[in-house]
Length: 196
Image 1 (cartoon, rainbow, N blue to C red):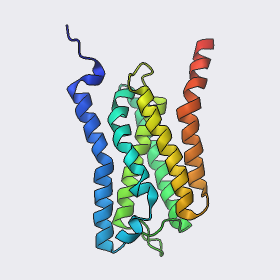
Image 2 (image 1 turned 120 degrees about the horizontal axis):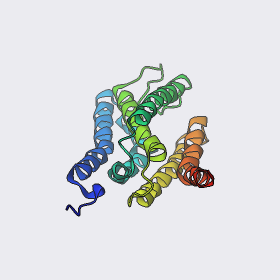
Image 3 (image 1 turned 135 degrees about the vertical axis):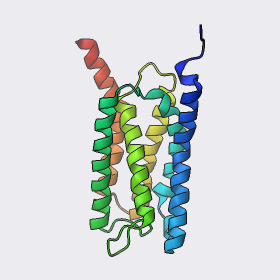
Image 4 (image 1 turned 180 degrees about the vertical axis):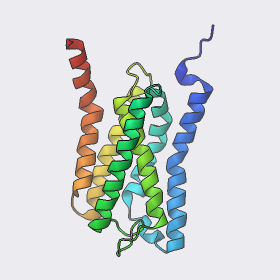
């Protein structure tokens, strides 16, 4: 008889550590690419990259315990949607020249740091969506992961406003929809499943 919980098994812990390293790897790559392109000073004005994305270190570490990885079809759909949404969002920034310049040049060319950010954004969107739509409601890490998700969405909205001196549509949509799906959606779905 094995008393170790699923959340404490070595492969879960190692997966959490690997996912927790992704923000560090993304930041290091964006920094190195920005140094190479001569845009590193702009990188440090991009608050979502330099401040907010660090919330994903603890979020990623815990979210691996909350996601039900046996829901392959749903996770595949989430992956497809995440790719589409992130490509559209980055294209929106590109078309409207909303990037400060470390990811996308003024002429619209996407820099290597931009491709890194796009890849990182896709990964994090997959984890956030899977956290909402593929969660194990009995997970002991659910509350902790929810707190980090709420911190992310609030911080992202605030930092987006500070960077642009105004709210931009993509930040508003992500902030409010993220808060809705983390805070309200589980209660709505839970109460509906109790009624049926």
